[in-house]
Length: 354
Image (cartoon, rainbow, N blue to C red):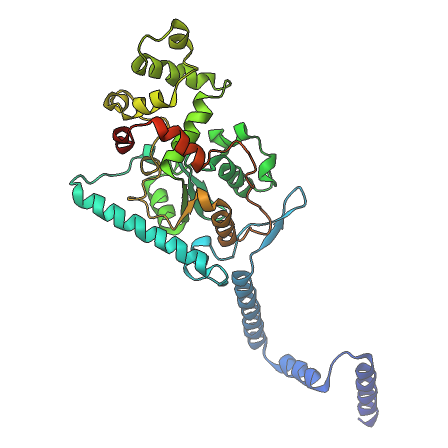
């Protein structure tokens, strides 16, 4: 027994020198070994559950990151807070003033919709066709309603990066014509009714608006003053010239490539226009494209504060460090001063009808 004790002391000393286990740890290990097999299994199960709980709460606080095939880290949002959760219970408060701004915008829409509903006895139900402008991002649980002439090309580019799972990394590397290919993005009308209701309830929904007359001038300049837009000239220009211009030349009736802004406005306010066919999306009203009185949008961005609002949305999605919203540097963009010049020759009656 003395030899065994000496040998045990010698091993303990060597173990201590090697820095392996303290006496307390060794005693703890021996106690475990004395337990029955059933008790040991229960203990291991408890320890495993404890570790899983720790990892779960860590994932709630920090987005899970993955590497794309291009070697760029992006936030995949699995196991992290959704944008809607971050909006309702923010973990960072440097955007408190921005959130207040969006709350004011939400209240303004709610008040306007309430007033309109009071004047109208009709209760409209949304159809599948009403949802074709709502782009769905499943990975980040967001829905974006795009409005033409309100930075929708760049937002579609960003949505392609967010939903591409590594196919795209830089929004500006995506050609503008590719951003408008419908098959590149999934819209809400492609889901079943239960799936639509689930996403409308649980996903962050946002849209962007622009001063209406400025958006109208932007649409006119883009579709009727650019020589390359021959499809719009043929489809709409010829029709506008035929209806709005007296003594039009045969070339104008055939090509429709010299539509005046006053003629364009006359076409829009003409009651027969919408009876014949719906407005084109580039000059259709925002309320008819996004239905803000039927769909509760969590965020309403403005073209005038585009960069600030876009950064806030990307922050909520947890991707602001990985995706930058493209900056708009074109000198040809439509400004409020330019809009005022276009409307100088538009009568007050026509402006009221618009």
